[in-house]
Image (tube, rainbow, N blue to C red; front, side, top):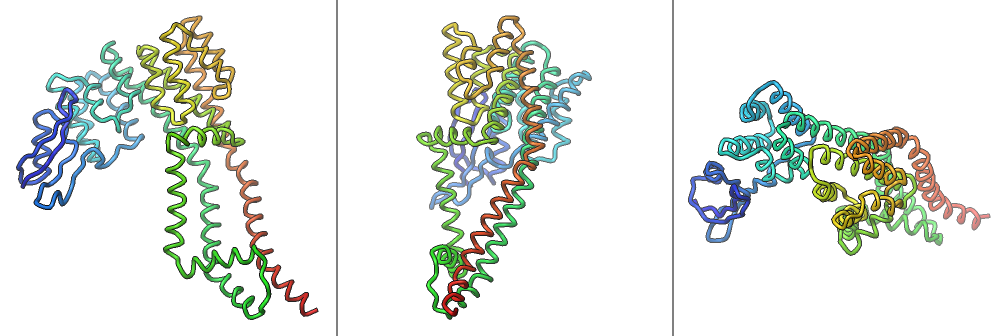
Length: 404
């Protein structure tokens, strides 16, 4: 069988070719055996390919698995195990096939004279720029076990923060899902009965009632089409929000939302400080640390600020100046504390203090998030029920008035 393949060699160059092999898995092993990484393998037939196998998106590695990996690898290296031996132990323990293959590749690279950081660079979707840069610094300084432990702590902070936010959103998500389900059931089973009653009465219906009847009719007569349209509208909105021309406006609107905007600002502040602190304490220069931090942040306004601060630093302007000039994104305290860190030569420690402070602030807010959201949900539910009740009851009062 013939297969068209893409591979990345040890130098990082991408190469394409066509090869014969019994199956794609055998070809993948052959490519890996010569020190390259198979990126995609597609069967070549007279009618183009029939099936494709993309190793780059085949499976994923969770954040919790990466935390265990760094902590266990750090512990084994501290105990005196060789790097390849420690990686082999982890490779045998992991049940994630994707991570298992990645660890095998790392072991092969190291056995051929490569380093752990260069091997990690080949898997940017698994090992972030922060991860790779800190490992590289640990290799150069000879303190890899300590650096890996610090990476694990950084990942744990991120994991805890994400878990707390998701946990705070579970309650409102369940309530909204239940409301949506009840609404759909009422539209399918309750409203048609009332619609028939109104039709028999021959009463003129108000606009709100006609709107509810339209939704009910669409659901009962065109169930799949209705949800397809709703899904298309939501998908188009999300796609529109991600376009470069519109993303900055959507990101700005999100930051202006009461409570949510404050929470997001504190999250971005904590993430910026934590990432910079980890990189600077590992020996990464400020420009490189800022460049990696820019990749970590999601909001385009924060990304632009960090990107512009790189140019400012190269011109000899202090890092604190960028933060002090943008207090609409970062609290005033951040710029002042960074300035103190620059003056005392303890910038990385100051950044750790900033990260700890705002992580605690986010923690406190997420604990109370459900309590804050609850009255908002009650108002929303009351408004929805009230609108439905008025829309359905008002025509009945019109009939009563006519009879009287």
